[in-house]
Image 1 (cartoon, rainbow, N blue to C red):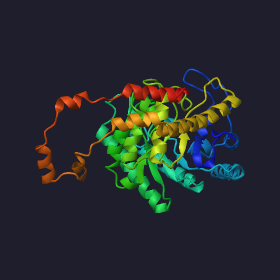
Image 2 (cartoon, rainbow, N blue to C red):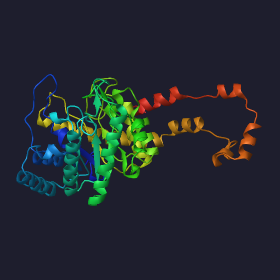
Image 3 (cartoon, rainbow, N blue to C red):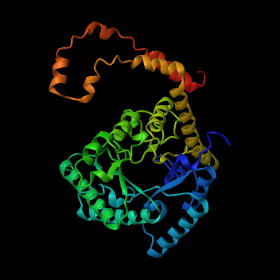
Length: 388
């Protein structure tokens, strides 16, 4: 067995919509036959995945009868038992149906907003029935094409009211969910509300139950805005809000590409893996990505294996980075501290302020300190390329 073979403790998960993607895009019809949820479970078991996540309608069609719903769920549960795959996360599709063409929780139509709440309640029930503990909210239609159409303050209040309502519903049902909000700057709307990790953190602080609401950042969504994903998840972690994560790859400033993890920006992917491993993140490593439109089913399996294998390779590279004598020597010199200002670690006091105010700094010397970041970055690149 290779050290890069996935194991259950790695907690690698995929959505039904990821490996089940049929290759359709805005300019072309499907290139792959659809797989049933049960077939997808067996595919994931074959490639060594730990878990599967789903939108409600990935599993149960939106127009299914109660009897059909029960049959589908029974068959899916049996397949979970047969394969050993688990369900760590669930979510609701509030973006595909035309009813949500102007949003779900932020729609101007109160009937649509009420339907979105009802649909999410049913989806929360379904997720809990299958063992999900994290519930993700991606507001793909919560936004505008023209700002003449919506009052942003009213939209934020509607969004807030919806999350507050659903928090109370989860508590009342005894589900013990952790809600994870997923930011994205645009697509499918021209502008999506709460587009970044930072804006979501500000929004969470206004909720009735901020303790049970966190974030589900996605690589592609931050890269679409030209942002640094590792910095975004560090901010979420620092706030205690990194409840879930979506891993894929994405060129800066493009449409939502959802490439295989590490397929494009390998150094950025390395620092993401290194951060997650260094801080001891224990949640799922969820791959919200799609195989190329050119892929057949066997290539979809290669795509899924590739996501997991790349993560494990980069995890090993992170271990080597942390143990490399030359790299660590550079870091030790860069971070060398003579302890002269340890007193500031206790925070503000009048004595500390007076002591700091009386200090004389050698300003020219501060600007002359050696910072060998070129050497450090080159060693990082050589480590990733396998020559260091």
